Length: 525
Image (tube, rainbow, N blue to C red):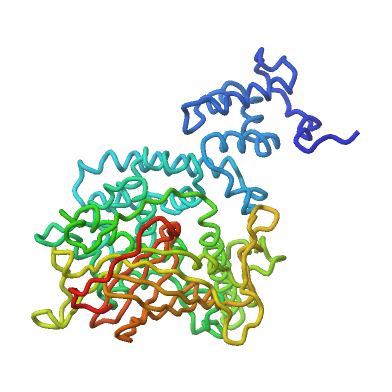
């Protein structure tokens, strides 16, 4: 007789009974397991303390809870699911090789650490707090944010993760800003749930609104290296290949998201302006409010795939480096187990397939751009934050309509992903064989109407470049950016002499009236 897979544990031999006797052990095994399951899902416990206490009552229950195959197949997944979101884990097919108990313990340790460090946040000096922040597991925090559907974000906020990330940013300059690639994307997402996060980016120097630390990433193109130097080369489809010992330095092991930290900084810049400027609706022409965005895990499937692709790429670099040293120097190094590509059958992480979210470019967009004219600086050499008057460095909002068009030599209908990107067709629904997507459109801002033509390059992790040409003046400005979901697209326009950050987000056709061009404005962007 064939048993359903979920009941296979009933046929497993019971662990040996030890000398201790417990009345609970005299009931049928299936009833005992049901009792243990109910203890595991006790409400109000982030970590299942009641379950752990039960496991300490006798050796048999300790074996059942911690070592029996049933615990890994049924007990710990159930205990995990009642406390954390799991849709993304199953959709991304990560559950097959997952050690649920250790996964659970790592999350609990992270939350407990955050609570402990947050309690010391106000009592310690900055230098002391820097050492405490080293114990925060930012990787697990990012997992929880990007797997959120209903449960994860409230847990993180209750354990003060947003405060710790803000403190890490403010103290980042003491540690060469090495934590920026991870805390900037975290804060950019959590600001949607607590707008007071923007206080970590406000200026203490009157009359400026945004801190010089954040503003430099908005306007100073050379400041990018303060962040990017802590990040590995963009992987896989780039021209970077190791053919000899020239790459003799180990690839960085520090975790950081695939969401670009610079575009996250641009989003936080605009959020801080609207949160902290004393009168943005009076200072910015035709000002419209900026939106906040709820998170769902499917928004981060592409980010996950690019992060996983990078992990595979760096693992292959280490294997090549170790093999080269072993061959030429007879040095045998202890290497971690080979990282398996669980999606290899779909073409993922191959030279012929590209992770893409380019289809999202189509639709109605609205947003802002900011600018800084360095020719007005006193010495013309050192970056200065923009003035406090938003009208001096902000034009009114822009409204854009974009559509995908075929490439010059393309005759087929542009690629569209599957509408149902579930476990059955993941990650194939996010893969395509052509890395380029061309788009066109038109728009209007405070200065007049303009046309847009651009390209998305998935061989460069979705780099977006486009030209904005005003119809009346025929003046053209170059824009570059990346998707920063779910907030939209952020980037920079112009150049080192004249330009700044921009941010656009998706809207419905009737959501906002088009901006009205103003003849009084003297700038042209």
